[in-house]
Length: 423
Image (cartoon, rainbow, N blue to C red; front, side, top):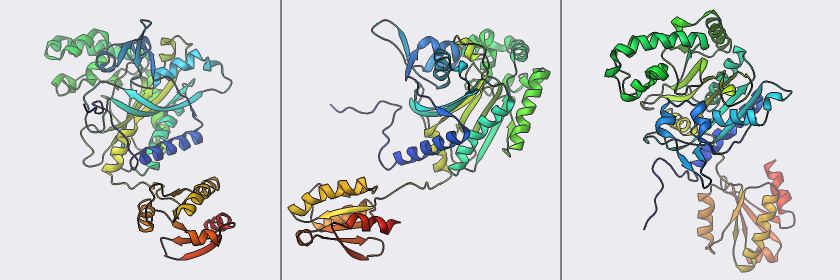
């Protein structure tokens, strides 16, 4: 019986995984410059964490979570997104009491959602995200957006579009909620079952419906921007002024609501405008979530963050035909000829690696021609050839595969001399 990979997952093989490593490396370096520190939370959490924070009217909670009961009868869920776990940790570890505020964190890891697999969308996917907790300053909204935008630009993406919206504060959202109910209620029977269930619970979610997005009432739905009170409007204007100061172009889209219940005030998405990228253009999404910390048992604490899919990041790079500067090739390949020489290369290989070189040798007892082919496949810069005669003479020949130039070194001085040729 053959066992195949589960639907909606993928094996990331050598040759491809280096792209992931480069994105992760750049993300970590950028976070260090922005003073965001890494946090690692469990892959599974209590189910209640997600139903309370993400929202029980969302598609994630209603349809997409991988939930199971452990042997103790506890309901646990594989994390479908990163923010809830970070906020839970913030509360449980009492980070709100740390001297340095706001708390600026980033995470990178697997998330799980049971949804229909398609290009750039998987049931197990890797998400990179940041969270800034403890500040209600609109400047940090702009900082969070700029961090995401900077990462995409650092990797060479150019065809980017930032879309922003304000979901307002509690007062603004309450007024907008009533307007939405009045707008949709007379014709709610024409909408899908999910929208009908959301009408009273969370009518804002109706605007995020994929099935009914072309319905006429969607186009004429009241905009949240019409219901922003003075404080919310001033906040949103500040965010826009800061983005302008950071020279980050953006568009305001009053229909942008995001798919999670915890958002308020700033909401944003970064999209790819690259030709042929696909129907789903969103690369990154996030926003402000004042009130979420209290929802999971903590003190009143404002927060903002984003999450982005590494899979979709790689798809966007491919759509723009961006060649990544991957660290391909090795420094030296040891060619050993004869049993004694092969035995000697075991220790010599270890010394080369300890000296800081990327190095390899033959493990299949191949002839010299096959060993040179192996060195070529590994894109080796040099081949160091050691035969029985060279071993007896305490010599080793080093050949540059780029120029063909060959140099003979004493075995005793080989590593020091070889190192000097790299300096």
